[in-house]
Length: 232
Image (cartoon, one colour):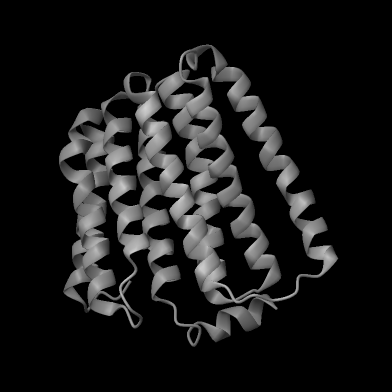
């Protein structure tokens, strides 16, 4: 973030207000402040993008916002709708990754690494789903689609980064890791045992996701070469 740019300052301010709201007020109050973080991120995107406007990215942000509001209102009451919205959200992110990655041959070892690294993720989600399974009655099919697309997004982000360690793939991988962790917390917080600290963690992770996906969208392949050299 560049503190000399008003749009960046606006995002930091809205992010801090959202975090403070999560800490000091009822969860419902987030409905009134959370949307401003999305709007400020979109303003940064519109003012700094170097490529044609991505309708997929904008649509993903709006769908994510709608789903996030329903989560705040209560995941139990809106499980089917939340599952549909976030399934679409992950499909759009999958498409964005596909569009922004060149078609290259993938070494066999890359698939092997992806398989090995995916096993702990699958185990964690298997354990969490078993824990909350009693709350999924009546929406199990919708939730199954949600899990499929969400895990596909995380594993695909890992695949693209291992295949091509470009800065944009690094940012999307970091966003996917944040999202994977956040979804575990959401499942436990909404369908097993509510804790305010879990809500704060979810809000913080969602802000990180917005930031790193923005970096993914703004990266034109010529920036952050020093970072990639250190990682190679």
